[in-house]
Amino acid sequence: MKKSVLLLFLGLFISGSTLCAKFDLGALNGIHMTDAEFEPSRPLSKTLYAIPQFGLFAKYSLNHNLSIQSSPSITSKKIVANQIINIELTSEFIEIPILLSYEFDFGLFRPYVFVGPNIGIIVNPKSTTYFNGKVEEDISEDVADIEYAIKGGLGLELEFETFSFFGQAYLNYGLNDLYTPPSGITFPEDVYLRTYGIQAGISFPLLK
Image 1 (tube, one colour):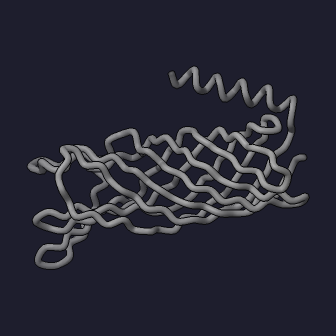
Image 2 (image 1 turned 180 degrees about the vertical axis):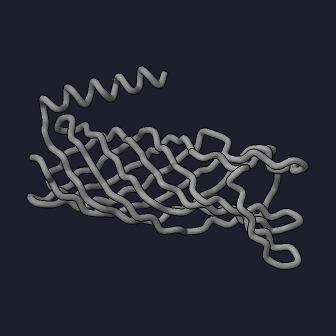
């Protein structure tokens, strides 16, 4: 499956390079909120935290409508698990999505949809427990190093002669369990992340 997807993207890239040599590079920022699916599922008090993100934006046009888009970014994610005690789990993320985008051409306005894999490199995970005080703990041994996810969404690009503005909304759907509970811990057994975000930025054509 992974090999067939790689061959598909490679074929699109090669065919597109002969049809449309257009490359855009820029920067973006945005905010996102992360929810967690705990297994086994239990009723919990949850809070969604709006956290900023910053990154680059690159787009290589395969033809007039199709392009490969990437927006590597640096951000944080934070989730809570409130039962008898209040536990917060936080980590920095380096995210690297590779997305296939389809644009609709209405002149200046170019709405688009996108979907593709996203790899999140997890850095410095820690837990903060509030029970008779505040206790912080490094949990890197209990948390996965990488989150594998599918990212999809929609956006709008305003394309001018020498630059473009864009904005997009997305869902990042985590596919792998990120948590291995230490000995003696029964909840949660598995943790999957669901991240909702909006981004905006500017890009400049390097090849036209």
